[in-house]
Image (cartoon, rainbow, N blue to C red; front, side, top):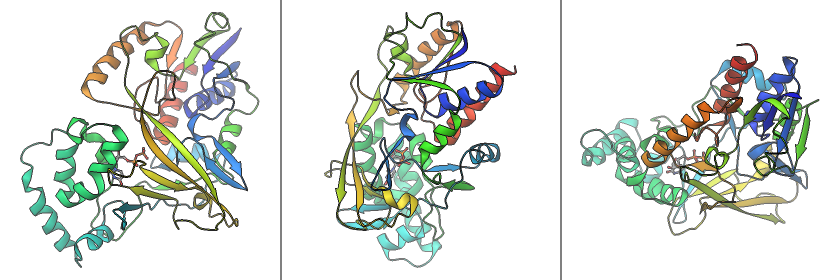
Length: 365
Ligand code: UDP
């Protein structure tokens, strides 16, 4: 009998498994897909790492998490500076002095502040949803051109029905700074994310192509504790109802040119373009290959049986999640962790931090 059966080999599962092994425990990892690594997994083609499940850019301000990942891989100096394309015009992201200059032809931060202050007057009182939050942060022009269409297609809902915290992920700056993140540390693992996952799982038995929930009976007595990182509602056979997720569809193309869009990420912020962004993967690692790969990312409604990418953290879903979380609490010898099991829009560094804390509590607690 193993000490731990870890279900899912994404960042949460891989970090937990690593920590358990370090603590002298025996661990078996099960992975439904044909490969380990969850959504950070990359596929290499023509020497280019393709982010198969969407762009992943590591960024953190946690000193301990940064030290932790740097034990396994080194990071390059990639800085995410995406560009927004709205009706054929390009604007810098996140919202900063470059964006304001492109929109309004202004020169000083004071001028930008004055325009935004005027536009945000339409919102009085505490913002109650994403639309109100966005307008109160950056005014109506930016909301209309760079936020509304992108957000509504990404989430498949009106901005008035979405929680405001989503938009607070984005910085707003009155400096000429196109770095999408505010974090102290940022980069892509040299050689790709698979190196990080391989290093975390080194010496650990991983069985791929195994759907734990389908084969639950067969694995009943395999381990003293199960660490489950899949969807929490699926674990309980949807018995209280279904949580909502957003799905994604990726269309990848090989192009016979060296440099297609000049940047890793271009967001298409108008509603009429069906994809939210085009990723040109080689730029994550400053590739100089003669060819390139681009991926169009289409948001999609999620249906059972498909990959769930984003939890939809609105009030209805949070209430249902709380009920599932109570069931999870009562489930003996099972630990639930990660984006799907905790129904939480975790960034990579947060999920690593959470896995480390969880491991600490279980292994040394
Ligand atoms: N967002 C936006 N316009 C953009 C980029 C982002 O309005 O050009 C908003 C949108 O609401 C989105 C949120 O910011 O849901 C977070 O976007 P991000 O690209 O950081 O999310 P990711 O999918 O990378 O986690």
